[in-house]
Image 1 (cartoon, rainbow, N blue to C red):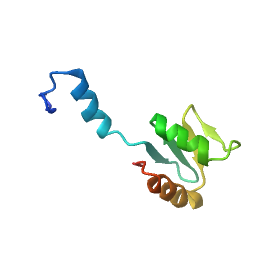
Image 2 (image 1 turned 90 degrees about the vertical axis):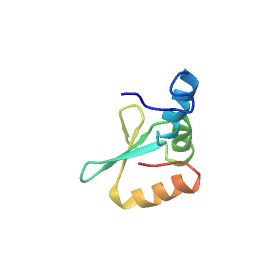
Image 3 (image 1 turned 90 degrees about the horizontal axis):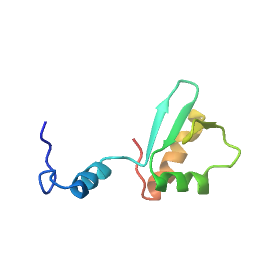
Image 4 (image 1 turned 45 degrees about the vertical axis):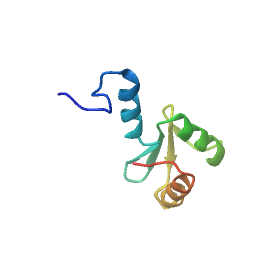
Length: 86
């Protein structure tokens, strides 16, 4: 498959820019009674450090356990700070 970047994928810099633009800062995984907010970028990890309590339950390295009743407010805060959520 020959995907296209501004230079036709000839340079690593263009390839990295195109791929970075399509990567969200956060993803949310729904596990029924809990949701996992995954910080996917350095900016997302910094946002978590600044806005999520230190005693929040973590899931793996970059996942934060969130109760469903709180996720809408958290996502709103993330987006209002200019980050993206998928």
